[in-house]
Amino acid sequence: MSSFVFEHHCAIEGEPVTLASAPFVAIIDANALYPMVLRDTLLRAASAGFYQLRWSGDILDEMERNLVKAKKPIPLTRAKRLREAMETSFPEASVTGYSALIPCMQNDPKDRHVAAAAVTAGAQAIVTFNVKDFSNLPPAIEARDPDDFLCGLFELDRAAFVTLLQEQASALKNPPVSFTELLVHLERCAPDLVDAVRAELRRALPIITIKPRA
Image 1 (tube, one colour):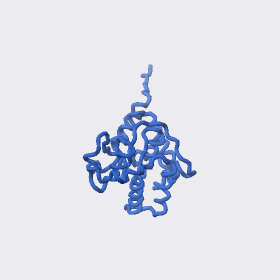
Image 2 (spheres, rainbow, N blue to C red):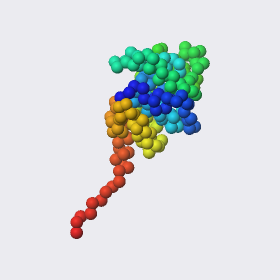
Image 3 (cartoon, one colour):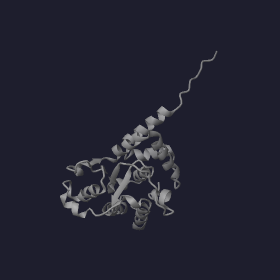
Image 4 (cartoon, rainbow, N blue to C red):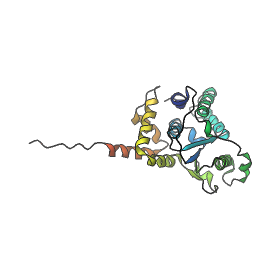
């Protein structure tokens, strides 16, 4: 699967995404932006209006470093193009002016910049795989695992979220990925979400009654 999906599906033309007005604001930590399929799902959910996406320059710097130093790294030029595409598509996502708050945060020192950005953004959630590093957050902000966060979004509108995932699969061309294959990939990062999606699909199947022969 390509590691450059978002640039192709959303920002290849360099046009920003028009977001619906969602009241819920979430900071996405760098480690949740690193896995390709998860990143694509999170960005699509934001563009569909499920939540208001926020990040900072520090967070995107860390994402770039992760992509370049991964077990299957991508070239720095591609990492930078991906970042540029994300910033172009979500110009309102960037949080600035939080540096003075960093020393006031009480969570893990290396992640205090994320908490400070969340305060500045008025975020209700920090989406991260390192939930344990975000204890003692300011009131009204909670750290949420990406799987838990996406499950919450799914419950807002199950049908719309399934459609979002189907469109995500359809956008993958090199190589093509079926919806079923996409769920398998997403399951590595968000198993509870995928379980919920599969259950929803089973519920949506028509019930076929076979009449006995006369």
